Length: 376
Ligand SMILES: Cc1cc2nc3c(=O)[nH]c(=O)nc-3n(C[C@H](O)[C@H](O)[C@H](O)COP(=O)(O)O)c2cc1C
Image (cartoon, rainbow, N blue to C red; front, side, top):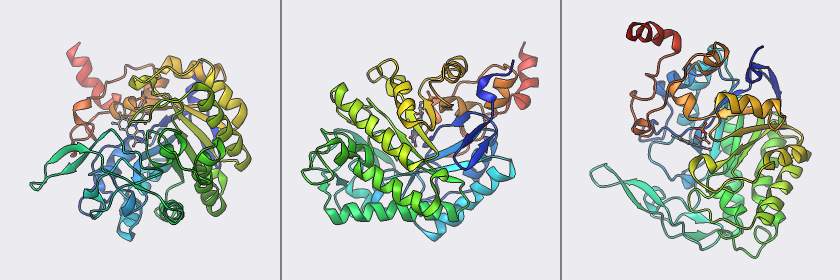
């Protein structure tokens, strides 16, 4: 019997050919200056077009949102043009691709922001390192910058920036956008009650902490339709100095988000269980509870094998599974699943190094096959 990961799936506006989703993966290969996409990215994403859906690496929504060297942007006309290389390559190979849009918030540094302090919900600096360039253009690690507490005007501007970036993504030929409300970036900074200690309508209660994520989602949905918009969360996440908070409040926060997003009818919710990256275990049954409240397509992610991924779908805990590291090393992952072929392991040493090595040189099994047979 065919693996359930390979069954087709209606996800919002799109009939996906399978449920094997390529997770968003920052790979630091954008062209500088300009934070542009390029031919290298087009080759890499084109190689992976057999995924049911590709979600791009996190893409900066505006100049004010930048916190990484080598991560592409979605604010300039030049960037929009550069992304057309990627969307054309993926579409030519029969794939679907959404752009993941993010604002790094407090996980940045004046280096990126013309000397300005990074924006944050409150005056709570991230106890985290960011990478900047020194005077010799060498990457160095420094403490994230002192922050500026966002005014209401700053919040409105960020909303506009997300909407503009979504407009730009569609202009560049993307099939949709994923709003990045995970992994300790700006939108999760607003969700976390230790990082967001505001006393206005964007802080305090569950409704207030969730407001920015939901307002941005609604604004993009209003312009482009719910079927082309997804959102990613990391409940119980602690990456990037997201201080853990009590289980009851975590549940209340994400149950509320799931219920509100059901009303807006977004194409999918995407949950990354960071236990795969060493943070606390997620309570059993949590994904199922979110799925029950959201009622739409749930993509799960974080340390899934092929077996545990297909089980999650069979047990109706999820509708699709996103794979990160497996997609780095196995551009033909759905074929390997279909034919029960061995999976290659990704080399962490080349995750963020730039260049073609460790990026577009992982072969499909068909290409590697003869070499493997020779070795045996
Ligand atoms: C090299 C690398 C880069 C990543 N970049 C992003 C990113 O840009 N956006 C995001 O939401 N998650 C990012 N993640 C997390 C992955 O999307 C995924 O959640 C994680 O790798 C767990 O899935 P896996 O066990 O299948 O690899 C990244 C992970 C890795 C290993």
